[in-house]
Length: 217
Image (cartoon, rainbow, N blue to C red; front, top):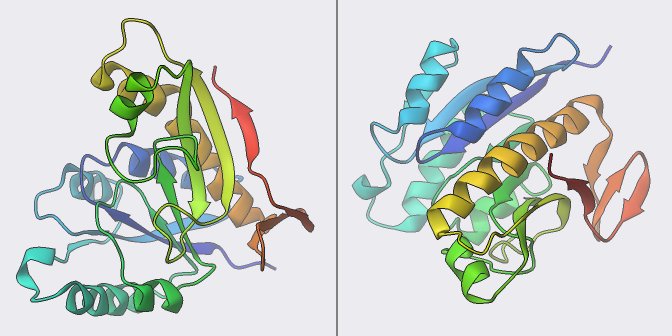
């Protein structure tokens, strides 16, 4: 019998994607458990979401470390204590060092608010509006040393409206796309349907080089 997938979620903010993942793990048909939530920012609202769900929550304040590498060493030690199978970055606003990424290669995924490879990094909504894009969205991808450059597993799309501001578009992408696609990827991981590959990823044993797609409601 497959053991429940042990998941650690890394956050920096309000934890809306975290909440969606918590709710997914509460479903009887999802064989996964969030065993820990770690924030790099004290007082992040997502920590309270974890506590309310009975999930151990801790803060590793990056401002208390003399270097990025020192912070990553502490973060890795905390993750290892949870004996995590998978690490999910959910609004975790830190660039991780190559050594950290290598330690968890193939076990760490991130959700990014753009249709990768478009708009890696920050300010994705403003950049989409400024470019005159007619659609925006989000991508779940494996984390590699290349910023927002790992294999994309699943994308969702929604329209960009003529009167959108970055804030309005961000809310639409969150509500219609992000809160749907990250739980779906977690389900696939728990079912053993999704694995990393040398190139791309394996889904149901078939190698994919391009992301799977889901349309917004």
